Image 1 (tube, rainbow, N blue to C red):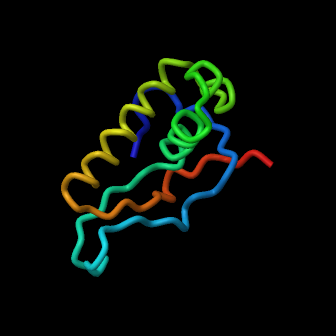
Image 2: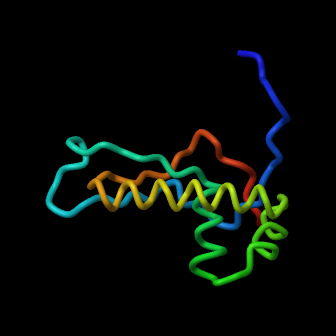
Image 3: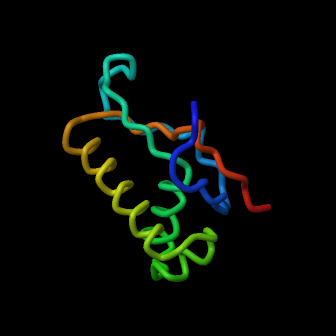
Length: 102
């Protein structure tokens, strides 16, 4: 498949969250719709919401622009809200796995 647009910049991810899954209690995962959270979206949530850093610092740590970081964070927040409001499982996607920061 040909690639359209700009090549995706390799993002710096400090921790691998691909073995994490969140789901509503009492319902087997096989019966739930799933939402995939990319590794860069999880890293954006970690830096911004958990560590409480400003977007500029978060973007610098991930090696991307602030506007790109903002776009990633907005997408992650929408996915998480959809999962919480509609009882969907959140799984970490492994297909877009950028290099990890050692």
